[in-house]
Image: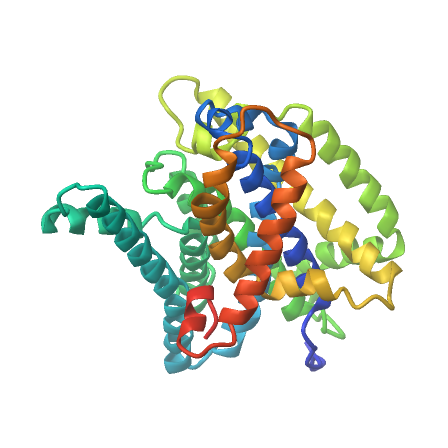
Length: 383
């Protein structure tokens, strides 16, 4: 095989636009959940909210597909260099774990100060430690999810030669492993990250091949390349057709989405009762995540191509700062906004849009400002 060297690319504006769109859907979902009044939240009414269901059918899978896609480029750079490999993993672990630790510490100190100020006795050291550890391993769960996925593909690709049978065993084990400590959510998101990583790897490895020799003994990788390449060529020839097909499939599948579809409600693990029903539910939840994500990726790809002169400054700003916004918006919503919206006893149609605009603006501005301050910028995932 003769390979053509791939030119270096500038920052992918389409990826930033998609990330920006995705993080805004996160804010919308959280505002629906926490911005409609205390009784709306405590009754779990948001599980039946169709806008909420629509967002949660695809937005986290979309983030994981993007994360897995770009993880390949990072891991590719350190292939063959053990020192660089572990430096990369250590740097990423520091980027994700440090803000989790610091924000958990913030939550603990805030809670303790409030307790003492209300006349309660200080928490005992042993209780304090247990609380901190329990909250630390579950706080900002999406950061943990990305790190866990990175570790999986890091080990499998660099040290276990992308062992397919081992992947199959691992994925099958998801159905019997417990869902505690957010494991159910991690199991749900891992396939998206892994799929994006290996599709990108396949494209990178084979898309620049001028000739494929020994076609009679063609490898599985070459066959996969041919299939993916045909799909890409077909998409480039008829992108609108693919957009319509995905829209129809996504729309039809969404008709069956209900409160039990949420991973947070039904979990991932298969219980002894309802085995077939649970397998169908997990499969449906995974497939609609792929279909919905693919639809919005193509939709934004078409929109950005259609408006070539548009710089997309606002969406790309959200995309570039999506990690920091994810961290900050949760605190703004739960600590600041909810103190006002919990008192709502009736809901106006304009409440949620106003909340989304305010939280989005404040979170974006704060993420940008903190991201420029040395030392402090680690709080928003900047190195």
